[in-house]
Structures are given as C-alpha cells and as structure tokens.
Length: 152
Image (tube, rainbow, N blue to C red; front, side, top):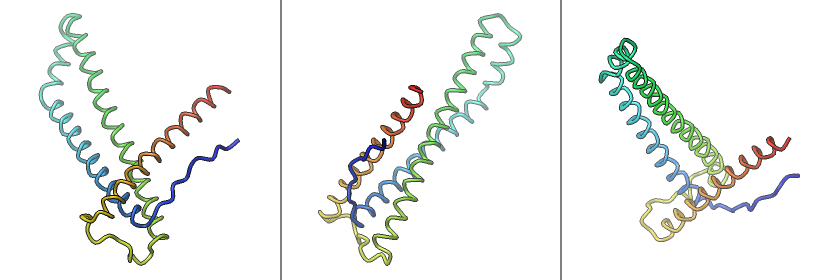
C-alpha cells in the first residue's frame, strides 16, 4: 500500500526563500560543472593523447598507464554527469516551487523585499529544512522502490 509521509505546510515567504536557495544551488552546480569541464578539456589538451599513443607502442607498463588514464577519464565524465543530474533535480524542484508560488502568491504581494529581517532569516531556515526533508523523503522513496523491485 501507499505510505503517507508527513507533509510540511509552506507559506509563500518560505517558498520564496526556498526558491532563492534553489537558485543559489543551481548556480553553484553550474559553476562546478563548468570548472570540471574546463579541467577535463585542459587535461585532454595537456598531452594525454601523446601518453596514450606512446602506451600502445611501448611495453605492458605503459599499456597499464593508458588503461588507468582511461579509467580516470571515465571517472571524470561520470562526475560531470552526476553534477548534471543533480542540476536537473534542482531545476525540477525550482519549477515545482515556482508553480506553488504562482498559487500561493499570484500577484507577488508577499515577496520579501529584503532578506535582512529576522522573519526572512527564519523563513530561509525553514525553507532549507523543508528542502532537506523533501530530498530525504525522495531518496527514501527511491530506495524503497529499488528494494521492492529487488524483492520481486
């Protein structure tokens, strides 16, 4: 059967704060992806192809080095892919939050003017907690679904 989880009630102000947190996280992830992609491009242009071609013409030790370089390249691309998947997840949460904001505050009257007030700081903390609990709930649901598939 379906398991009902605890549903947190969010105010328009907490949704605005949640949106800000998601935008910051998205920007951070985009920056990390950019840095990783540049690092990989720099490594590729930094002589990796020469090492690989030398490895095919030399002894077994060099072929092991080429194999290890291939593993490192695959690990790097997996890291970039993981960052992109996380960015896509954040984007989905951002879209969901935007939809909820259109329902909760269609005219934007409740949008916080500045984040310096105590109420705004409290709402930001609540939004961060709600975001984290939402992530935990999603990962628990995914783990339960995976366990259920394995049990079948």
